[in-house]
Amino acid sequence: MKNPYLDLHTSGRPELAKLAWRYFQNISHGDLPRWLKTIDKLPKGDGYRQLDHAAPRLGRPVDQPALFRQQLLDLHPWRKGPMELGGVRIDTEWRSDWKWQRLEPKLDLNGKEILDIGCGNGYFGLRMLAAGARLVVGIDPTIVFVMQWLAMQKLCPGLSNFVLPMGVEDLPADIEGFDRVFSMGVLYHRRRPVEHLEQLKQLTRPGGQVVVETLVLEDEGKEVLTPPGRYARMRNVHAVPSLAVLGDWLKKAGLTNMQVLDISKTTTDEQRSTEWMTFESLRECLDENNPGLTVEGHPAPVRAALLIQV
Image 1 (spheres, rainbow, N blue to C red):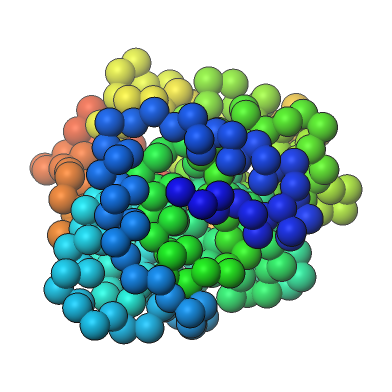
Image 2: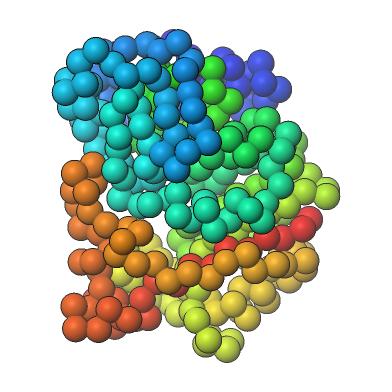
């Protein structure tokens, strides 16, 4: 396969372009040959795009929509969206457009260079470009999300939105900072959350901003939930803090200028199973007799988004 990160090199991030290509060439996944074969069969687009929509549109309508739809379904599960590829609408698990609608009016991304940690397939990167961002570099170690991004690049080449197949811990320590750094849905998966926040600060240019979106406990003082097993059937949730504790973590990381942008309960309308993500979703993770609790008896998901000035 042709190196998909060549444009990242010319966009001013040659060190990340080289690193991403090295990681890409060393991907080890049993489904990789099938996914790459599917992407190879997709039609190549001419760069047509309409990004300023809840479901960004990439590529013109294809000649064989039924076949094309099946090819896209081969890249299941589609979690972040919605989006419209080649005229086919993808109804993803998350209505990520709702989250973006809550955040975008409070953000200034015009002309900015952005790092999106845990970016999934790059959906938010598309919305960031529509909001005026110059360049979006997303990182996510989940290979099927990288494949979905490759499908989007095939349909709409030339997008300044990249998904690198790595985690935040794989970024070089001396990397030049970004104007904006996003960490959405990541913090509660980190065993050492303060270290993650410290890294966010390190990755941000002086005068830049960090956006942290994470699970929180609502009205719980100085409490932290450390699930002994799973949380909402997720294995790797290590700590869910109250807002007060989250504020303490930020101060320990040297991030003191915090603004709460949004606090929202996650509903089964915003996160649900669809044809494009057929596994269990939020409904199956809540107590059927008390939707205010998870199946394990923990408080149901509430998410907070914070803007921090560096």
